[in-house]
Amino acid sequence: MVTGVIVIVVLAVLAIVSGATASKTVSVAEAASGAYNNIKIQVTGKVVDNSYAIDGNVLSFSIRDEEAVEEERAGSSAAAGAAGAGGGAAAGSGATGAAAGAGGGVAASSSAAATAAPQLRVVYDRGVSATFGNQVTAICTGTIGADGVLVCTELVTKCPSKYESSTSALSVARLLSYGEQILDKPVKLAGTIKADSIGPVGRDSRFVLIDQEAGEELPVAFDGALPDELREGSEIVLTGSLNAAGRFAATDLALSSAGQAPAARVAAAVPIAPAIAPAAAIAPPAPAPPAASFQTAAAQAPTKG
Image (tube, rainbow, N blue to C red; front, side):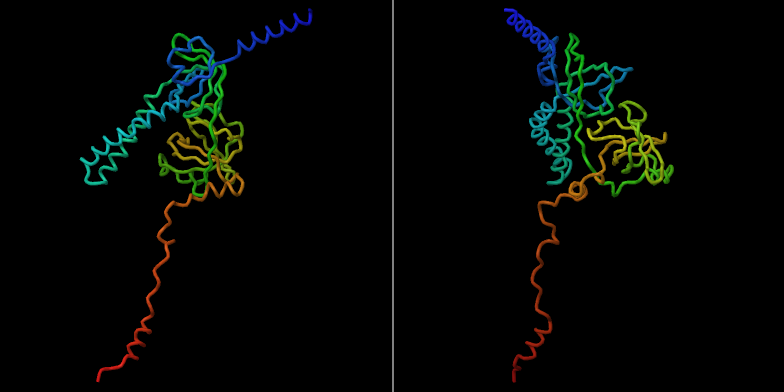
């Protein structure tokens, strides 16, 4: 009897704990609909560019449902492309004008779809992860209040790593050697992340890049998401420009393929072969017989008497 009571009590405690911690997984569109207010949910979405704000230890940002964006793009691309093609044909002549118009229509529809996709505002008051940034995938767990804002108690961010060859990139020392003539000019820059220099998004300097050979250092401003595999001491390749404040304003970041295994380095450095073989690969026509053979034949031909 006592054993039975203990089992019942344990089951009751487990039920209470699981009920308090369980969360329902929903999409951004479902969360933004208002149907899940005051219910603990988990929602995953991409951080909208430049939607974040940091106030002390409080981070607020917006996320969008990437599936909804893709659906809207697929639905609107055909109509926008056709309208753009008509405008392009009128402005330009022939296929060139139509193609240009179609490209503009698709680009406009993609931008509109990203803007029109449902968004959800999120507030998280437990600090800012160094990996957080624009376009990072955010997995948010919490409760939506009457104001439609998700008060997040658990935040996980994910950003897949990408790799790039540093062969054509400048070193920090080489970049700085150009002086003012290199300011605000887009370049590729390679270097190593300095220890203890990685900070959260929104600061003037996200991290410091070191030239291991020359010992030069350069602060880097970057608002994007940091790759999951990025560490202090990682070799990276940046795209961006040096500004007048002496900071490198990066618009893109990739891990250097130099630190990968040989097969991965080859894959990152060698472009994929085109589907159509280049002209040089097509076998040339058989060469014509040498002129001497024709002359010989003519010399052997009988002459008319």
